[in-house]
Length: 310
Image 1 (cartoon, rainbow, N blue to C red):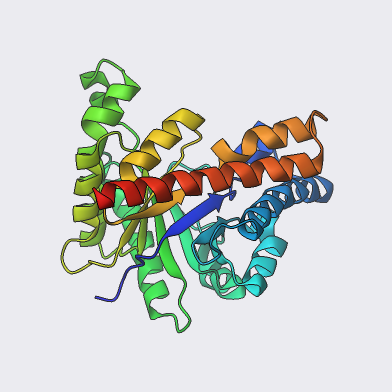
Image 2 (image 1 turned 120 degrees about the vertical axis):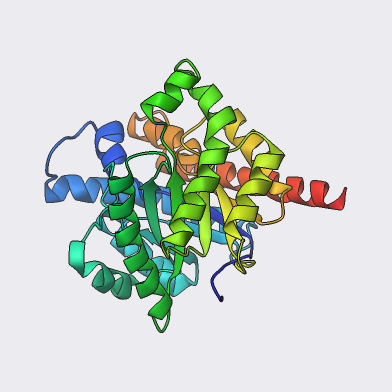
């Protein structure tokens, strides 16, 4: 097997579409061209923060952006010419069930931008609705096989979200934190195994934060089983507060196989809100996004060095 990507990878993801439109701007329904341009201009602030972080010392080969075609086409094109690692989502935004953003034309869109990674976000509970899981895994195996056949192939980045089934949540008396700690790690391993069995072969798994080192190790074992020893895992921020994201990064960084992170809203949301409210200049927002991103890179790198030297 030649799947996998095991070099360090620090993503600044801002491929948010639905949550950006409603959460940041309070808009519903179909956007006007002016509204679309306004969101695109806001995403440019994040991209400028990313470029500033790289200019001030984040290793360009490890730094990546994840941005959508709808609001970030110009950013994706620019990033490719600059030689940055890029990722672009293939999924429809905000749906419970994975489907292609551009339907049967998904391949054309990937070929138009040729991102380093084609990314999917998938909600998949291995003990959930089996017909739903099968429909999703059928679509995902088509994408996986297509990416694998590509000449100048985009790598496959798979964001796995394991939402609790009602019975699972009931078993921990509705406590989401208890679900995250006691049930989700085992379910994530099950999801990875089921998807692999369905011929879904990511190069990198993008994983919700885990509180215990041994759970991180089990995820890597699952991701790398059966000769997949180059497959990498990265931790996602899930919009959590700074303190929680730091804990997740420090836990994962010490585990071989965890190669980095994808932290977005924790980095950019507050600076953008302050800038849009007139409490901060655009330059100050760019600088703050750069500072926060750089800080998470430093946290991951120093935790990795410390635990692996121990």
